[in-house]
Length: 139
Ligand SMILES: [Cu+2]
Image (cartoon, rainbow, N blue to C red; front, side):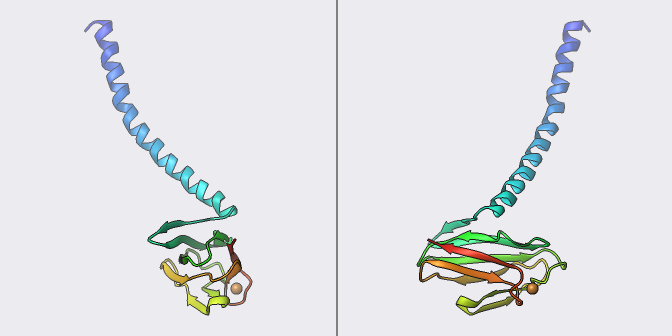
């Protein structure tokens, strides 16, 4: 084997070896995406709108409702899909007084609550004691 072919096969081996590394980078990107979502949670989440329904995925963590700020539109149905991820919270239900909602949040089970903002303003969502809370802004 000449030095040249040795180098070529080394290069091929490196190229193959690079593939799992790329896959790992993909995983890393996903982690970054989660981080981006977390930082979006610090800002205002808008969810995704499909067939006239705005769906916002939400979790309950030790930090409370994540996201704790949501932007929605007047007259457009809002669907919150809330998953409580920890027992270390008093937010074991979601209460939206303005819309008569009081739903238990079993651990790790996504719970869907829906309402349609009828006017501009703010709609609060909170735990039963109104200690852990978030706000839906309707411009
Ligand atoms: Cu509470």
